[in-house]
Image 1: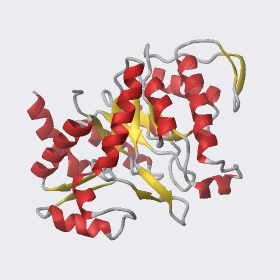
Image 2: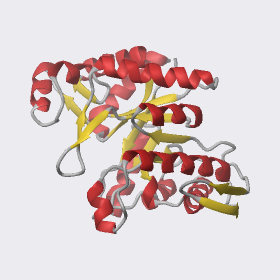
Image 3: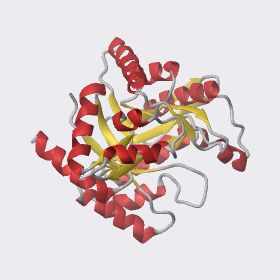
Image 4: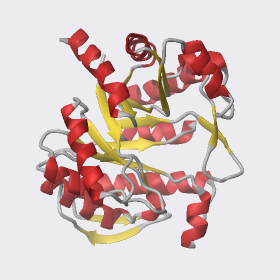
Length: 308
């Protein structure tokens, strides 16, 4: 069973001083990874805040969670990621996904292809990124990318970890064969705003998804880390009431699923600690990213004590 890792996803929107305070607070609270996000809008870009955070921290690792592959050519991205890795003395992890928010594509004038096409393009990109970051000279002729003797700066680390956030059996199959970490999402139908999705957080569905990943990883003799981005933390002495409130705001969520899913953390700190332990035992999910330092820091402290 993998040891726990905990990430904090930055929430500062355009405020450099707040960003640095968040980065330092996350490191001080014992988080392992500092994460950014990648959306078109009035907020920081994905990589620049990680470069700023590298300069005011010394231990915490740095990961965009996750880059939209369609917004970044893999050769150019490899150059950026390797540069950031060297500037941070080898603290970078690369998180990347196929993209999902159609309004951002429309705003940028980029064609929003079908999920099948976007996932296929992501697969080619990950293959290219892996080779370039490892220091190879890459000639590649795929459906979506063509490179001719491309070479970029290699990463500072011998093996820079790649997290792939995907959904669906075909994408999970190739991710299990290539990625160091798989970011599980368990999302369904896109809602009318083009940004949000119904959730498919039934425990039995997650059982099947993890079994699928483990089967395909095992075929390649790989042990893939599993990640969950926790969408809400509610510190309360009434888990049931918290679940009942969330059900009214999250499409596709049931009360029983809200209480069981690794994508929510409900209860007092002891209950959330027990919940995280249960999720790791059942699904092997050992890497959790949250958006609230103060609410989750006591959980990290409890779990670290249990593992020492």
